[in-house]
Amino acid sequence: MLKQEAIKTWKLSLPIIFGEITQMSLGLIDSAMIGAISYKQLAASALVNSVLVIPFVFGIGLTMSISQKVAAAHGRKDAQQVSHFLYNGFLLCTIAAIIISLLLEAGKKILYHLHQDPEVAHFAEPYLRIIGISIIPSLMFIALKQFTDGLEKTKTAMMLSLLAMPMNIFLNWILIYGRFGFPRMELKGAAMGTLITRMIILIALILTICFHSTFRQYILVRKYQWKFNFNSIKELLRIGVPSGLQAVLEAGAFAVSAIIVGTINAVSQAAHQIALQCASFTFMVSLGLAQGTAIRIGNAFGRKAWKEISNIGKSSFYSGILYGLFGAMIFIIFRRQLSLLFNDDKDVVLLASTLMIFAAVFQISDATQAIAVGSMRGINDVKKPTLYMILSYWIIGVPAGCIFAFVFHLGAKGIWIGFVLGLSIVSFLLNRRFNKMIQVNSNAINT
Image 1 (cartoon, one colour):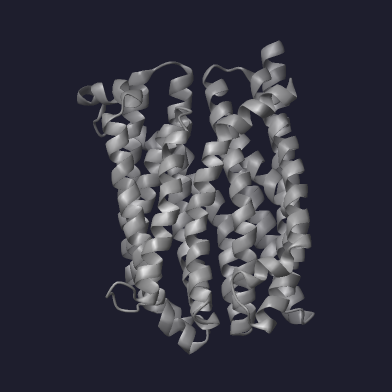
Image 2: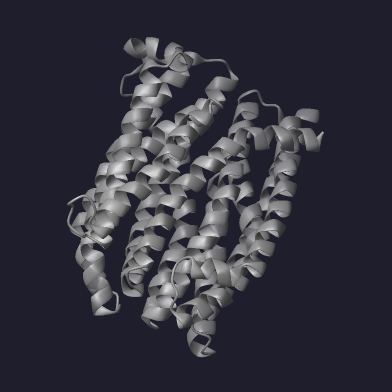
């Protein structure tokens, strides 16, 4: 039974995973192509990502409410509600994206007040301005992606995401290095390439949803369902805000840690960025599996099928363990080769290779905590997990990392020890919570 459920979840999740990996690859492509110019420009992109990640992942968390409401309505075969939450969810996320972009523009001078290398901060400001604008089409695309994913039509956005990667590489090549008569823009060129790519795939997804026969039944009822509804917005926020906070608590811990590492020196910051990019890449698989799990559980939750919910959750947990072991082996065996993909400075590569070992250690806990978050989002349990994340990341993980880094003089390695502690604790707490919720609701049904 669990094996069958695992296969179903992987089949649903694989297109999501490919889409997530492709989106993540845009950042990796930027880092690799910029790293070939100088490690200080690589460090500047790391600084911007550290500042950007907190508001951006909050926006992504907000979009996840769309897939949950759509999946539950789809489980009840209610096409009217599906269309209704498509409109209200997209409207909510578009407004949120504009606000986030404006806040980043207003606060861009913070880059000069984070005790970073002055040259790194100088490179970072124009990059932040352009990437901040690109958040608008990016979150609008993700919102529509959550709609198609909630309907279990996960291949739609995946295909567009796959097309985005070669497009971004080509645009970067032109704009970073100044080909075909374009000026050599270096880091700003990478940002422009990302902005243009995100705008193109957004337009393509809008046209697909509006005109493809797969989504016709949800478009035909737009006259009746595409209306702003405050209660629906409240329902979306009830799931989206805690989901966004959960994403912020985890990503924010990594972002703040990157800023802390930047106060050590530029070599540590560049090495940290390399290791973190690689760890984030493997996490995209866990995140995609978690989203697939959340969608399947959300569909079952709409039917109150708790036995099915339990089987989906357990099978995904075991999948997470196996995947985590695989990821750990990759990091340990190929840690130097992976580091050399980004930069050839021997000090940067040596430190990045060491940090890869810590990344290997937390692969299992990172995968299983992500899946647990997805499982609980599927049953609309989002408040208690948020408290667990505050405890694990901000009360234990980040402070412990700072103690190891500065009191015990371990530098960037100390920060990564904090990552291992925080992720291990949150994985234990979240999975225990999900199992308890399953037991309580199963007992309620049986009695």
